[in-house]
Length: 342
Ligand code: SF4
Ligand code: SF4
Image (tube, rainbow, N blue to C red):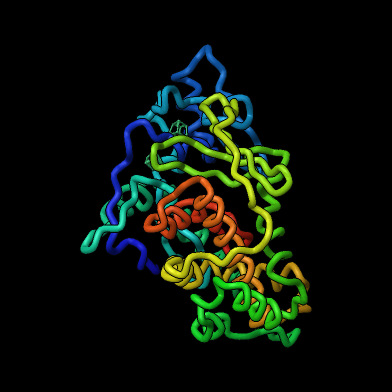
């Protein structure tokens, strides 16, 4: 298992945060039965989709219905998915563990080691046989992808493209546009910027970018022309205006000191999985190498937009790279990919 992100970090959950309780955990039949028995006669709201059951959200968009004053009211019965956080296990050619940097309980700490916390949070809580089942499925999916890509003449080395790319240069207009060209895309940086802003205009608030502010406020945004309304969400899902940031349209170079975070994103197997997902989505009419350039360009624009929003919110320049990483990390984990998550 790849586990590079466990090194040099530490984790301690923060009192009064509760941000991960907005992510709607999946719950097994046994977990639901235990919760229902405890909560009787109160009903346990759930949502069902893709053959899975998830704990319901307050008013369908706030925090989990079991969260009160930012504390889990059923902590000892919380599902395994809650126990996994802030770790995510992604299954590619081999499993890889990610640490969700959106969680402010995670800190960079030279010499730190999250391996025991990963063992206790994920490996000790995963249902028997689940990891092996995911590994088997991922091997089959990746094998099938590679065979199809080779047959279609689309196979290529995504890692070699990432290794050859000047990632710091990509954070500039000319670098981004060069990446788009190498991906066979004629659009310019302003168009890529607009695409990256599109989620900020989503009707459905659960699909908009979400940012856990340093003071633990849950912030979301609503696009209004070249401005964004800043909204704070409470547990019930109600939105409270918290100002407006102007001048959000049109490409702005991202801070150069974002390059190390960008490099760590591009090194994740999840990134390669998202490249393969793009090739598959395009029915193998695009090769792995051009698709890698396109995904690099897309991630660049996503990161650059978030850096701009945070700068407009008044984030100090020396905190901007780290805050952008915290803002984007969850969105990156949501990228379409082949393989799967635990
Ligand atoms: S996001 Fe992190 S710090 Fe916040 S409640 Fe979840 S685990 Fe704790
Ligand atoms: S069950 Fe508890 S820990 Fe899990 S999302 Fe709901 S409130 Fe949070």
